[in-house]
Structures are given as C-alpha cells and as structure tokens.
Picture 1 (cartoon, rainbow, N blue to C red):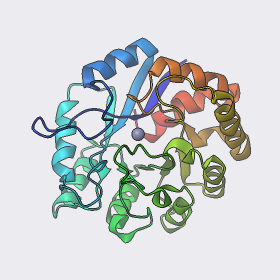
Picture 2 (spheres, protein in one colour):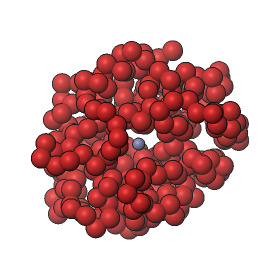
Picture 3 (tube, rainbow, N blue to C red):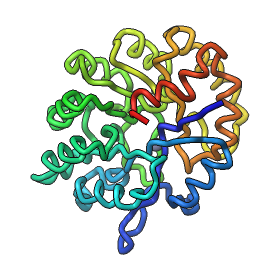
Picture 4 (cartoon, helix red, strand yellow):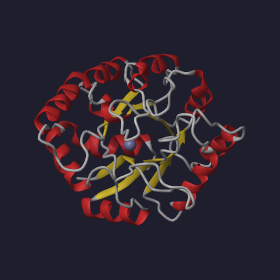
Length: 278
Ligand SMILES: [Zn+2]
C-alpha cells in the first residue's frame, strides 16, 4: 500500500538553544526520519514546526518566519518532505505575513499549523485570521492541534484544544481546508460531528498512542471506527503518526487494521496527495 504521513516533527532547533519539544525523545533528525520512512514504506511526509510548543506562554519569542526558512533550508535537498510552519500567536513578527505569502507563492510551504492548547488562544481568535485568509488565497490547509497535550511542564490549557471550536472557524472560513489533528482524541465524537457538519473540515489519525501499542488499543480502535462510520466519507481522513512519538511501523500496523478497506487508499495515500500537492 502506498503511504503518505501528514503529521511529522523534525528537530530543527537552533544549535544554541535547547530543544523544548519531546524532552525525553531521542534525536529526530532528517536522517532518522528518512531512514524510518524507508523502513516503514512511507513515500512522503508533511512535517510541522512546533516552534510555539513550550514557549507559547509568555516565554522567549520564536520568530516564525526565520524558523520557517530554517526548516526549509534543512529539508531543501529532500523532495519527499513538505513543511507546515507553526504560527506562534505570542510572537508574530511584522514581516511574517509578507514572508509566508512569499513562501506560499513559491510553493515552499504546504499550509500552517496552529497549536491550540499549547498556545492560549482559541482557533477562532482574530489574531490568526490574516493567516487563514492566506490559506484560502493559496488553497492550502491549516492543521489544528486538538485533544491530548504533551505537557511535562504543566503549562498547556485543554479548553483551547477542544475540536468543537473548529466549527466556528469552518463556518467563518468556508473556503479554508481545516485539518483536525489527532481527530480530537479523546474528544473523538465531538471531532466527528464537526467533521461531518462541515464540508471543509478533515482530520488526521495521528497521535492516538505514543511508544508502543497500548493495552487500551481495542478501545482506541472502536472510537476510530465509530468516527469513520459516523462520518462515512473516506476523503475526510488522513493518515499521520506524530513521529517521533511512535515508531512508524507500529503505528501503520495498528491503523491498517482499523481503517476499513474501502477507506484505505484514500486515507493512507490519495487524500494527502491531493491536499498537499505531492
Ligand atoms: Zn504533532
């Protein structure tokens, strides 16, 4: 089966600044990512910069455009990877809009990532609207973190990460493609409703467990199956892992069994190919 993974992370932190993402994880360099993609038979991937994770709350400012170009520079020799830069609402430099528009015009970026819950802003907050307008203009999706939060420091707020907020974004920005990352997990049914209500809303299936397949796997599977049955449309779901939080082979093995056979081609490959212009 051909596979595209739409939810990846890469360690592109500054050399002189300690990485704040996934504190306990081993290196997640480009080399490691490509090796694991090859091992798991994943053809292409979309990674998002989590430049606001850990600093989203009143901490040092990470200027989004610089980090976006850092990330692009890091993968410039790698045609199998595309970038969705994260928007850090605490720190939007004056030239951010111009630079991101330039990158969109040149086809360098594949959309945006909004880290609701890590940052203390609702997805419908006007601070994001100029980026949403860009997403509409260039027909690229915006991916929103929803649900479970990785929070060793105790600084995230769950209320911002509920998928129900995306209904308002979907209605106000009817032409914007919205991806509910992690299908709202554990608010899967709420996410499924927002998904089925709005033609412009999609979901990725990433991050339902970290490390190994957990004991709760049957419960997770039944939630996922409920959502897919309830929504009933194979073009609404995209495969993703949240690597490096999980091994690609393990996650694929798990999801392959859960996604109905009539959905597989769409979910594992063609939806992403179309949405991200691979
Ligand atoms: Zn993620």
